[in-house]
Length: 151
Image 1 (cartoon, rainbow, N blue to C red):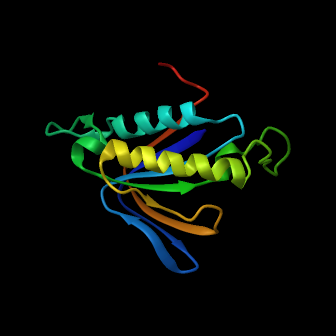
Image 2 (cartoon, rainbow, N blue to C red; image 1 turned 180 degrees about the vertical axis):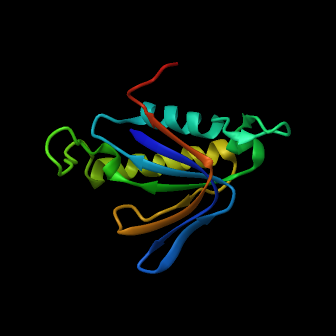
């Protein structure tokens, strides 16, 4: 499982012109799932995301997590995080899971983030053509892959 986390002052996702998720200060989390992913990958990335200390403390040092600041989380599925670009100029998405595998893991990640943060998680619509807008704060953007863990 791969995620791209962006620290934001605001973010929203729309489908067919309708806003389906919106947050203020917090994290926009883009999620890509592959067939080899499972419960352990979800739990690992949910925990890392919730505890990631990328918000400033009173001294201006990135030392606080989204939980510490009471921030919000918006999670959006994005199969293109598993793009393979080594050959040619057209990305291959063969590693990205199909809906029957990916959607339950995406939903599980959202539930685990809700449990950890103690707040509802805003979401996109799985598999839809979405428009995501955000104001990246910093900018701070962090990429994680559950298969590349350094405990």
